[in-house]
Amino acid sequence: MGAVIRFDNVGFRYDDSSWALRNIRLEAEKGELIGILGANGSGKTTLLKLGNGLLEPREGDVLLKGKSVSSLSRLHIAREVAMVPQETHFYFRFSVLEVVLMGRFPYLGRFQFEGKRDVELARGALEAAHAGEFANRSIHELSGGERQRVLIARALAQEPSLMLLDEPTAFLDLKFKKEIFELISSLVRSRGITALVVSHDIELASKYCDRIIMLKEGQMAFMGSPHEVITSESIKHVYDCAAVVDQNPVTGAPRVSVI
Ligand code: ADP
Image (spheres, rainbow, N blue to C red):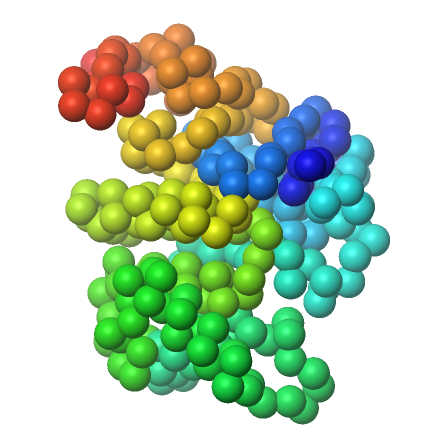
């Protein structure tokens, strides 16, 4: 089977001064979990936005199951790609179930309300994200970690082939960070979803992702398995920070100690 998403020598710039991304070549297969690392401003969010067609490449092409994303309708994209943004603010007191039902929007006709199947799917997504017990609570009443699980449930309710997650663990404490990575990884495995996850949590990304990409100034500096990619040289190159990398004695994943 072909790639779920393919970046074919993609270049993008917001204005004519400099490239935010250049020469991006990446293929993600069904059921693959890929971590995207890199310093602030290296192009990670731009990469995700190109992946769901919010931005159009200036060079090359982004292909979703073999079709150029720029040629697909918003609705078509929304049935294939779900984005979990870094932070989401809700101005109304939506219930958690209502928030998750928003994920069904691409499947509803104009003026059509959600049906029984949509509600079942939304409840199933909440259960899968270990957030079933929050269904009737207001989204405003949840902690950061709980809200993140609900946003992942909303993405699941979209029944996507591809999930794009932008720093889903950014504002969480250590335990919740781990839980979110564990959840993403188990959903990718059980549902065969492909996921690209932007993160600054190098060790957790290394533990859970199949492959890691490191961006530097809009270019792909490194790509490979976590063990291949996470080294003191790559950390120095990408983050400009001296570090020792060895193995976590329990998990075997790369362990990064900043010097
Ligand atoms: P990251 O997610 O790695 O922090 P981004 O993809 O947000 O990086 O940004 C990549 C580059 O593009 C940065 O130099 C940033 O300043 C620039 N950039 C991001 N968004 C915009 C925008 N809306 N307009 C102009 N430049 C932008």
